[in-house]
Amino acid sequence: MKILSWILLAAVIAVYCPAAAWASEAEWKELTAKSDAEYRAGKLPEAEANAKKALEVAEKTFGKEDLRVGESANNLARIYLATGRLDLAEGLLNRAIAINEKAGGPDHHSLVAPLNNLAMAYHSQEKIAEAEALYKRILAIDAKKPLADRIPIAETLDNLAILYGNQGNFAEAEKLVKAAIELLEKATGPDNPRLASSLNNLASLYGDQQRFDEAIPLQQKAVAILEKSLGPESLDVAVFVQNLAGLQVSAGKPAEAEALLNRVLAILTKRFGPDHETVMDTLLNLSDVYKAMGSNAKAEEAEKKAAEIQAKLGQK
View 1 (spheres, rainbow, N blue to C red):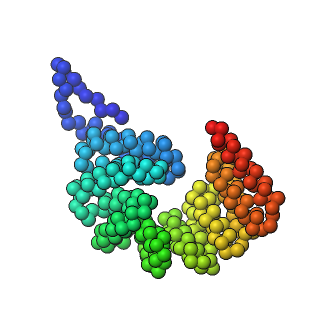
View 2 (cartoon, rainbow, N blue to C red):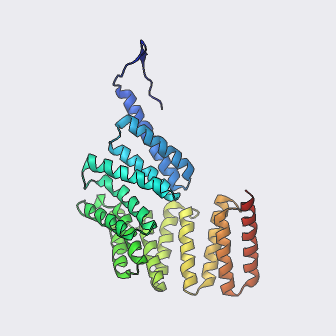
View 3 (spheres, rainbow, N blue to C red):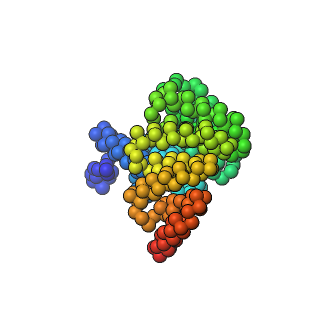
């Protein structure tokens, strides 16, 4: 929404207008909410467009050093992270951190999100020491908060656990992800979707250690939580079901994995259509499962369908 400027005698008269300021804040909130919903739905181009507008409105309405500008910068940065534009993301995140430090101090809760996202950017580039330092800084900030305000820190605990797990430090990784699970169970209850993510991470950690008897029930629990909260055809459910299928394959149970991957295939086909890249990838996973089961004809059929999709995608 554009704020009207009154022009008198060729001069711009700046008049404080509470109603106009309120309208701009309402627009910022609306753009922020739309971008967030689109981001969570995987509609990244739409999310990016609205995040850019939200940042622009925030700068004009609140000033360039306001915490809401830091929030908008972080929101746009996470979209850049999701689309692999790390340089753009890092620039925005460092800006958000500087704004939030100046406006709220070095321990302000607004620092958690941009610090976590910057740590993820470093982690993805294998800048392990830099990422670890940021994760630990977040945990130090979080230690001063009451339980109700500590829910976002579960993501940091998970991310640091992943970092340690990738280094083979399984004991420390397990300790951290269990802390995330305990925090979320106390703060949000047993059916929160965020809890499902931590359960998924613990299952993955156990899978990396061949502890499949422990991993599979955890992953099944994570799937059940998402089914209840998001619905059985959610894309998040599809991701977690695919992870469960991977655990079943690694545990030597290809028949269980086949049923799970066919479910994933149905969800993805309904959501994206039969010629989407994710459908192709799932067909290739199914082919591997069929081979493990000795069903070579089914494996060839799945590979043929995947090849047809790849050919169609190559023509676009």
